[in-house]
Image 1 (cartoon, rainbow, N blue to C red):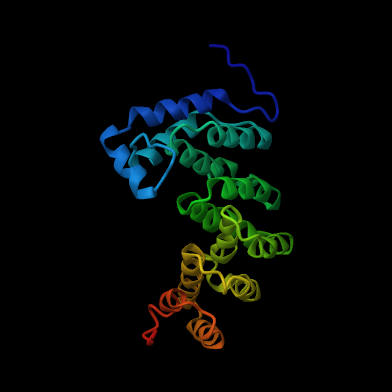
Image 2 (image 1 turned 90 degrees about the horizontal axis):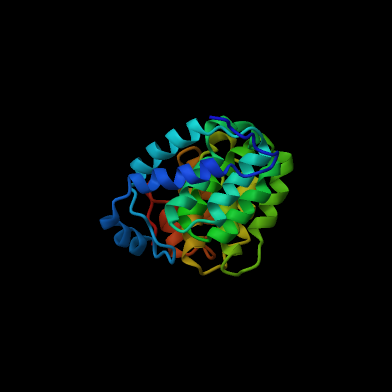
Length: 246
């Protein structure tokens, strides 16, 4: 069979088609309504459990290598923009992190991730991108990425940019001793007055996670901002520190 090479920057329609077929082949339609209800999703589900999704996508991605960065990004966008089912957007996110394309993970990719975060606007997409895509890029290129994260942390208080702010707060969940504490504190502080559940939960989650590495810093931060932290954020931050949360 003759294989027509992709034009630089062209989406691989064969991969897109194979993803759709692969997901449908392992779908369990009886699960679909429950999955959609749990995620409060306007977009329907096929009903593919997460383990089956991972297996199906690993096979498809392996069989359809993309030749360049432009084709990789175009294919991600095609899967995302043309999705009829939520699992197809999960496939787009998975493709961004596929091991073959590690070299594409740099500050230049943040434009793509910003668009996915804003248009996805829900935690199942955003948390994966924040902690497993944006976070590693921040650790690799702190000087280039830090200003972007600060900008996201102060994004407008609307439904889409809320998720950029959540990303700024939780992108360092896996940073441990490499956490940029000045950046973390700044991203939290600019959002302390926000009453949204997902922002308050993110603040508590980020502090709770860093408490595993530096409990004294977290205790000090909570004490310093005792009058501003919501009860939810404070409880989450101190959850494993054996302290009273009020």
